[in-house]
Length: 243
Image (cartoon, rainbow, N blue to C red; front, top):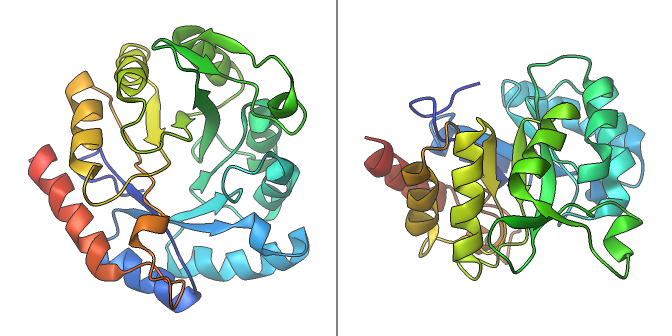
């Protein structure tokens, strides 16, 4: 996997196989291209199509849930049996299932935790049933990281951030990820205007590797495709900050 200077890799959506190729090249291959399991009627259909994406992306496919939809947890886990991509998105309660199905320790399996409203605390009840619980499970972010590692996860997917709406919480999560050597994947509401500040917060905290997800803000509404020129702009910012 090609991390820019071993620290940053972008995560953007591929609206089609051709668009996936375009954005992968626009990002100089420092890009994981997301394809959402929710877009397919069956796991079999997803596997057939995602294998094509995985080939043209040289393995840098990101198997997605679809807006963090916990109902897609099993689809992603089952796709992992057949599609050996470099990256899988998963809810907290299904990380172990996915790691076991991937069958290796190299692929990245992120773990969705959500902002709690309190810096240093995160919501880990992000599964299909737990996400609907009347009382969410709030835990210390350091404890959450230990649990993620126990399950075979490689990173926190911090979602939904709503851009910089939870800035103080992002600072706390980034600090914890740096101290505990876990990757961080900021997700939700990231655009060309706030990308620099969000990435700066993470890099300044000393996070070893990060994968910012930039989705809807750089998608052409008419075509449903991610704009390659915007991916180039994001990569330019990465290069400025990483040096």
